[in-house]
Image (cartoon, rainbow, N blue to C red; front, side, top):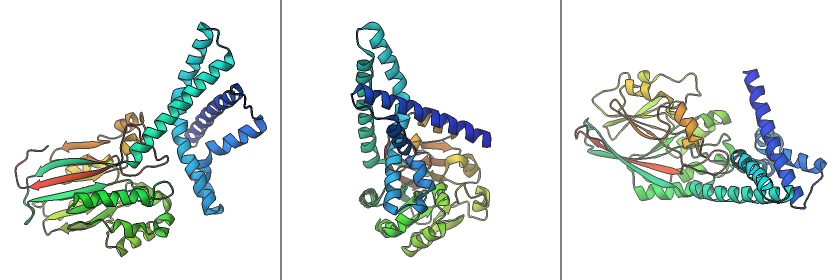
Length: 378
């Protein structure tokens, strides 16, 4: 682990230096040379601002810590796409110099402007995707009787990441869209918090979540980020105060006909196995399973669940990261029928790091479950 950390840190620093070197060359070509004794300290603070904000946040004024996190969040996106664009810019600059009479300075200037324009377009499109949520509608059939219920309309939102970058304005979008959907039940599938519970408490976000109107209530489970922040007890207590249960390896019954099982996140090594959570339940009734990370879909299917909802992956959030999540998880996004289990993985409603989405959208799932009507699904 120590060797791996050193290797990753070394690669990270080298890539940051690669970007900084290009930035310094561009400033010089543009006639705005900054002395290295000034440029590199400023660039260092910029490139490490997210890490610094997390490491020393307890020692900084709140405004300073939040400011560093905002800067660092956007830098994550700039860093990723700079690494993809700059090699192409280097080739283009070399080609210009080799095939025309363009000077070295002009080739750097023109290709640098092209990279800046491309980054601006990517950030603008990514920002729109992040702040403009869509509703993904599904309809499935569970061939079981559910008491007096013929169907159940479920709304799902995962990965809100409420904190410094995702706040009240985006949360209001969630409340408004859910109330337009008029679901029977609302499921918050983990990572409601972005690590730190303080903004959630300070701004009364639990009360805002309670404004979502449903027939049978809103329920939540923990994600990995609730564990990272260390404020689980405060979060659970705050949610309980507005009648939103956070299910911790617990089961509730909806409308006397459907089991809703909420599992602790994989981060919690003490969480129960899926089979333990379904043991003793009436298998004749439908079972809906909430588990933040979608790494245990096969286990949940084997445990007899009929439907499961997950988040965590963000569908990579920024392409081409989805190629990585696709290799890690059997289902990293969308819908999968696993045996008789209908599994859903959402790309999430909020964002981690930069409020940027490329190749993914902020979304709410709207799932209509029909009971006792055969096994055809769509």
